[in-house]
Image (cartoon, rainbow, N blue to C red):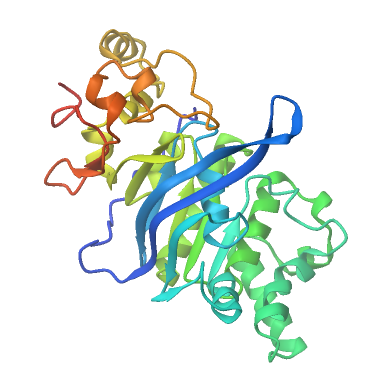
Length: 350
């Protein structure tokens, strides 16, 4: 876990008045996989199971959870890179899952992605200038060559590169520089939403801070919305206005960043927060004595538990948890919602 020193986001978006750009309802993503080594015997893997949320103009929604919880699959499903089994994705009032090809093309123009591996996401056969220009050639073909070149050079300078970099190839750059190229490519077409899929996990801590600062500055300049996918809660806290916690394909808790970090209601969220290391040994010992630790392994999405998905690892599980799936319920006046039959009280105490 990174020892991040950036201040948390303070200019929170007013969620009650900001325009909703992306509205997701009951989204599910399933995959058919071979069972027991026999290719003709198929089983259904429930990667994302009934997820609902909104992303508003100018805000960052942080998406966190353990590896394998469905974060990246959800991100890819939003722009049609993973098959949607059920549910809806509504972008600026237009349905995209069951919509026309034109509506899907609009979504892919307005919603861009920044990927986890910055070098692997860049075509080694293309120059940096060609990579950044590609979205304009695809979605703004009416622009002339000179105008595309001007916009590319302007964007490269904005992300901390320069005109001399435009003719080079990706292998000539560091990981941080490659991620700056990825950011430039994502923003060159002026999108409304950028999905950041673990954008700093492959970078050194000092470079992580630079990239997060760059994203925050660009967000303020462009009233940009971000869906920031990460497993590092310290990074998510520095950039997010709201936080959504996933476990085994389901949403466990969602709410204002300060409310979630300062008063987690779901036992899973609390366990994740208790696992974040702190640099003070005395404080770490105090926290360890009261920490909620997770036991057991994450169940297989091929055979998820009945009722609450988290019940097999939850110290508060009851018979109700085994028979009934908890809905997202309002947990506090801060608009935090938790999917738990036995949520913690306000704050990190019972």
